[in-house]
Image (cartoon, rainbow, N blue to C red; front, side, top):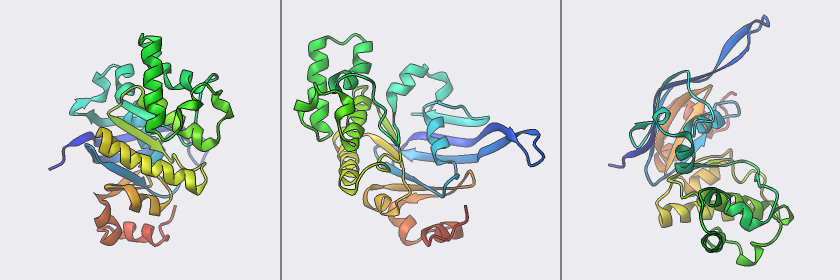
Length: 253
């Protein structure tokens, strides 16, 4: 049996908002979600726009905290962990690459340099990581903002990997990329799982991407966890009627 790396138990997320009358009221973003993410596997988080997918990822490295319920990493409550330690263990890659001003090597080694790594070791680590994400070491001294969007996304991934995370959260990491660059990112995700044993959780609106790389699927709708299942089971024999509607493109937003 595959043990969970991250688990949610009866988790509800609320945000302040206004009701139809214009009065202040809490809006429920995620409603009593109970699910888990298997260690060393790729989980695709699916659902219509507004289902709560990105909000779920934000909870997993404490960019937000739930109103109720518990989230655990290796059985430990996230709130009991040092926030900086947590964000090293649970890395995040955004929809669009978010690089700092400076060179590629400065971006990749930002975290390790903050922790006091020597310049020589930082350079060596950057050379290792840029090759791991499929770029050439000759790019290290280039200004990061001169790279293509696809290259920048790989540098963002290398910078996250420099912190030696155990979990990677990826919020639609291919949405801004052309088909070739997107395919490269998907291939890299599978490689990182097999080479480093990482647990990967990624959001996608493209079902074929989930079919290609996911071991597990989680479907969200209106802030609820509708179905969590092995990918083959979800795509071939979904249990919930809403899952069948979603796969048919008929699930209402």
